[in-house]
Amino acid sequence: INKVWIKTGFFQMIKFGLVGVLNTAIGWGTFFVLFHFFSFNYVLANTIGNILGFINSFFWNKFWTFKSKDLRYEEMFLFILVFLICLAVQSGILIVFKEVFKWNVYLSQIISMVIYTLLNFIGNKWFTFRKAKA
Image (cartoon, rainbow, N blue to C red; front, side, top):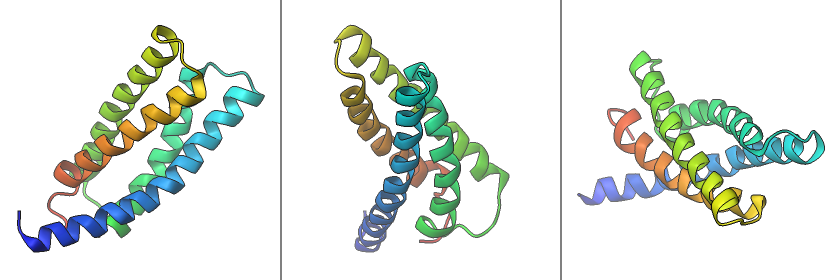
């Protein structure tokens, strides 16, 4: 790993984090409203929130974080694939924390989202936008 990659990766991680804050607000806000006010099942509310955050994430991370200007189907496919893998892992952790460990659903959501975010950055940095210029 060279110094340029470390510097580029660091700034990309900061940008990814900022986009993640917005995604989290969208995802968490959707989850909270659907679960708390409309009594949606927590897994369904989580999935809908993540899908809305996913759409936001794709555009911000593609054009701003990873500076990938061309619309390539490979990127869209990999972004969706990384998202689905991360969503499956995050949902599994959420369910285990809530159902097996009997933790509070909100605490379970927060912890599983931290794991989701780390996996999502790694997946998009190393796979989805690996050919993009930093």
